[in-house]
Each structure stands twice: as structure tokens, then as C-alpha cells.
Image 1: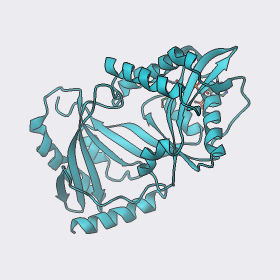
Image 2: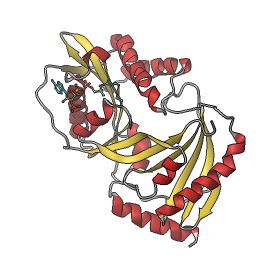
Image 3: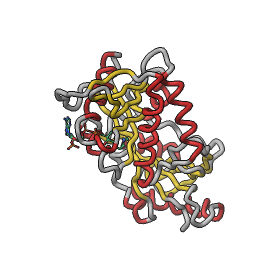
Image 4: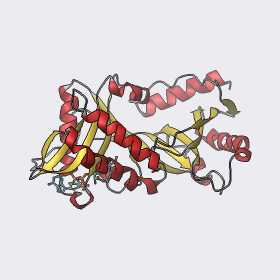
Length: 297
Ligand SMILES: CC(C)(COP(=O)(O)OP(=O)(O)OC[C@H]1O[C@@H](n2cnc3c(N)ncnc32)[C@H](O)[C@@H]1OP(=O)(O)O)[C@@H](O)C(=O)NCCC(=O)NCCS
């Protein structure tokens, strides 16, 4: 089977597994390295992050796979490891091997488990109208410039809460970058961040991107122009009291009022608060990111 045949069978397989996935583009070696196995092909390439970006380790080795036969994944992972292992420092926690797979393409994933990868993060999707809402005593209003310190604390809390689960990486530079981002968002003409309050006190926040701001995430789905729920955080002492539900309901109302049919978000899969929360609010997994970090112990 040549690479074009593998790509065609792979595309048909994932289309049948999940209609919300995009058609996989042809593998483009570019600066990467083409790997081939019996019934599988992949591109391996390195990616450098920046200190101010907390959403992943600094040095990433990425593998984009096409599987006509899911059993081919193990061979591709072994070839990839042979390719990269001599260039990584043992114990380097800022260096990870990263494989993102359609969440429902589960047949071959034991090959990842056998090689020390963990499923750490999910891109989840919600069709407009899914999930339930209930009456709430939480007032949701657009965040204002004077909310900056509170909104920044809430944004930092998400990074710190998610960090132990493997992908998010807090660094001092990231806090400063978040402050600059929040300052810009709070000055935007249209609200992008909303806060949930009781008795005038801000208890949580949500940051929502609508098209065209969310255009960057269109690559994840076959749905046109998805929205992206970029961040949600509730003060630690208020979690489990309905603040997140009120913020999510509001964000979904904004999405639906804008005529957008799909919302995406990323969450840490082992997060015991966000994972059940998002799935009871109408989301389901679309892409799962598997990480091996460090690559060599
Ligand atoms: C995830 C998070 C945003 C959810 O917000 P929350 O305010 O804790 O969520 P809620 O209180 O609305 O819902 C959580 C649970 O409380 C229940 N609940 C309790 N009182 C409620 C009320 N009055 N109204 C609605 N739900 C209520 C919900 O049913 C839900 O139960 P479930 O998990 O069994 O479905 C919040 O826990 C958090 O900030 N976690 C840490 C940071 C984080 O993980 N952020 C998300 C990153 S993707």
C-alpha cells in the first residue's frame, strides 16, 4: 500500500467513525520526516514553544499519523522513537512526544499505552442546543477593565489546576503574557470575557471566541466556523455551587444568538472537575492528545 492509498483508507475510516471530524489533509513532509509502515504513514517534526505560552512543553516532537490499519501505529511509534531519542536529554520535562488522534479512533491506541504515552488532553465539541440548563442565582455580566486583577487570578488558577495533568506548563513568563492578553480582551469593543457574580462579588469567568476570532480552530472539525470556549474558571471555594453552569449557559446563549452551530474547547482529560462538567454541558470528545513526557527518563 503506498502513502496515497493509506491516506484514502484512513480518511474513509475516520469519516465513518465521526462525522464531525474534518477530511484529513494529505501528509505534507515539509520540514518533517516521512515514516512508513505496513498500512500506516506519518510525518514527524519538532516544534519549539515559547516560555510565555503555558499550553504545552517548550520542546515538542509531533507525529501526525494516517492509519489504514490501526495495528500499524506501534511500528510508526518505534520508528519515530529511533529517529528522535538521541536528540533529547534524559529527564527533560520541557520535552515531550505528542500524538493527536481522533478520539473515536481507539482501535490502535494500546500501542501508545505500551510505549508510556498518556491521554492528557481533549478537544471537545458541542452542537448548539445540547446539554441542559437550570435556573440560577448567579448574575453573569461582561467583564470590565476594573475586573482585571480578579479575571487574571481566575485565568492563572486554571493553568495551575491543570498543570499536574501533563500538558499545561506554568512559567513566570506565562503569567505576564496572560495579564497582557486579559488587558487587551477587557478593552475590546465587544465582550469576550464574562464574569459570574453573587452579591456583586466576582466568583468565576469565561472567555469565549466567536468567528472570526475562533477561525484558528476550524481545522479540528467539519463544521463551518466553530466558536471556541477558550477558558473557564471558578474560584476554588465556590466550585460545585452552580457558577460554572451559569457561565457556560451564558456562553452557549451568546454562541447560539450569533447563529454558530458548534463550539470547541480543550480540557485536561484527567481533570476531575472540568471533564464531567463539560460532558454534562453537552460536549463530547473529538480529538485526544497523547503525551510522553519526558521522552526519555
Ligand atoms: C470546571 C469548573 C469551571 C466548573 O465550574 P463549577 O462552578 O465548579 O461548576 P458547577 O458548580 O456549575 O457544576 C459542577 C457540579 O456542581 C453541581 N451543582 C451544584 N450546585 C449547582 C447549582 N446550583 N446549579 C448548577 N449546578 C450545580 C452541578 O450539577 C455539577 O455536578 P456534576 O459535575 O455532577 O454535573 C470549575 O470547577 C473550575 O474552575 N475548576 C478548576 C479549573 C478548571 O478546571 N477549569 C476548566 C478548564 S477547561
